[in-house]
Length: 224
Image (cartoon, rainbow, N blue to C red; front, top):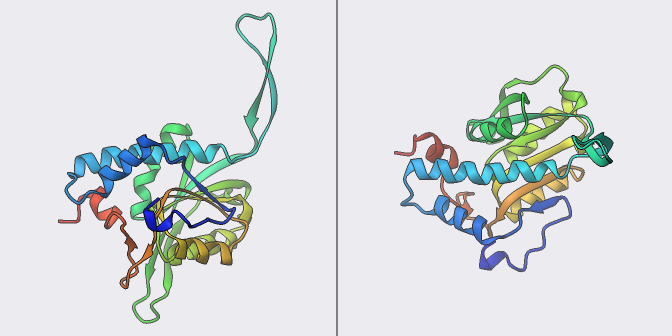
């Protein structure tokens, strides 16, 4: 979190990763305009992996008792309740799919494409492909940045239209800002947001500042 946001208290729906020295070092690398693409991808993937591991802490569990190989005493643990799937907001959100697959074996992943309508300037749905049973799953919505919140709001609206309860949607991003957070939780107060860092706001062009540039272009190598 930048100096300008140290006094910002995010709403209860927001979970920010612990601000460790490791995370700060990783964020410094991917924010640096001089970071080479190979390093950007490598360290962004590390942060995404941490985000995915964190979001699993916010899924419901039920008690489970098992017997260890010693056979002498039972172990009283837990197991996850219900099933999950990922939904990536194309294109940048696709960068987060691999980490989800590495952590959640055989996870199903849907896709949604939302772009700004040139006539109305509003987010418009262009494409979607969801698992047929998505309404019965917890949905991890994937997009690296939460700026104005327009695309995320449209994606959540679409998920709800397909039967997903609002409270079963968890939105993962590396970078967010107070404006986007406010827009999202005002419209959908039951959603949860898991983010790595919160920047201090948007500039006149609606870019997060200090930000990290266009994540999708830097990740997929189309920025130059």
